[in-house]
Image: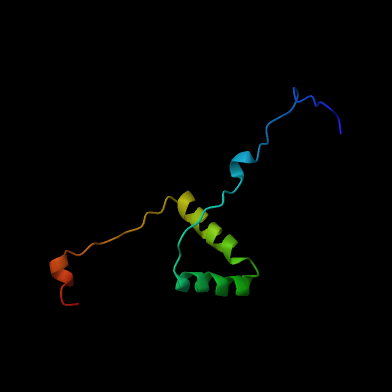
Length: 77
């Protein structure tokens, strides 16, 4: 190894923005099982499938539609 390296002509990694970040999220068991089953069918790891799905949602700017019921409507159910 050299004592010093010259990085004056170095270029930034053009793929650096595309690097993945590790995060911790809580996903219910049924959802994990669904993606694991799909992974068995496709041969693609389930984490990759989840990432592909979420990426597709983000790129398409999909929004989750939630409808909240007032407590009076849910009482007794």
